[in-house]
Image (cartoon, rainbow, N blue to C red; front, side, top):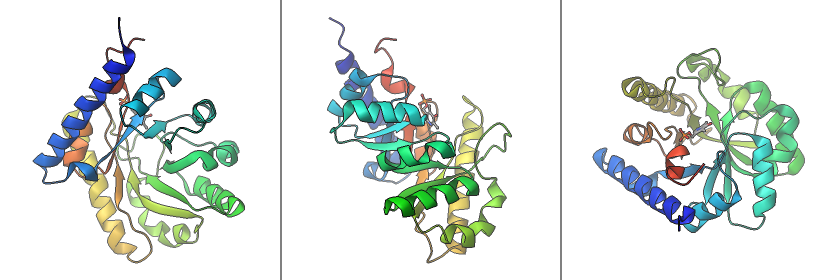
Length: 235
Ligand SMILES: *Cc1c(COP(=O)(O)O)cnc(C)c1O
C-alpha cells in the first residue's frame, strides 16, 4: 500500500542530508541550519507525518491556515513560523501562535505588532524581510532603506529582532539566487556593525526547495522547504 508517511520521512531525510552536505562544503555545522518544513500545501495527516519525521519547525504563509492547523493539531509540540505577509487585522489572533515571524516587511506592520506584544505582555522574535530583488510586486524593506531605521526599530521593544529574511527573485536562476543570498548576508553583517549592542542578528532565513543548498552555502540559518518534502506523497 502506498504510504504517505513513509514517503515524507524519506523526503525529510534526503533534504536533511543535502543540508548537511551543503553545510560541510562551506565549513559550517549541519546543526547551525534549521529546516523549517513549509506545510502550506498539505493537510493535517501530512503534518503529522512531518512531526513523526522529527520536523517540529513548521512554516505557513497564510495566517488563516496557520490558525486552522494550530487549532486542529492542538497540543502537538510545534514551533510555528509565519513566512508570508501578515495583515494588520490578523495580528492579534496570529501572534500568540507564532514562534518566529519571518515576514516583518514594513515599519507600519512592525509598529502594530509591537503594540500587540505589549498588550499580550510577550516578546515576539521577528526577522526583517528584505526585498532583495527589488521586484515591486514583492513585500519587504528595500535594501538600503533599513540601516537608517535602527532607532525606530529599537523603540519597538515588544519585538526581538533576530535577523533577516528574503526570497530569491526568480525561481531556477541559481546564480541570481546566490548573489541575492550573499547580499542578504552582507546586509546583515553591515547592520550588525551599525546597530552594535542593540540587536543580535544571528538568523538568515533564505532558501526554498529550488535553492536551499545555495542558501546554506551562503550562510542561511533557517531554510524554508515545502514542495520537496511532499514529492511522491500524492496530490
Ligand atoms: C511557499 C514558500 C516556501 C516554500 O517553497 P517551496 O518552493 O515549496 O519549497 C518558502 N518560503 C516562502 C515565503 C513561501 O511562501
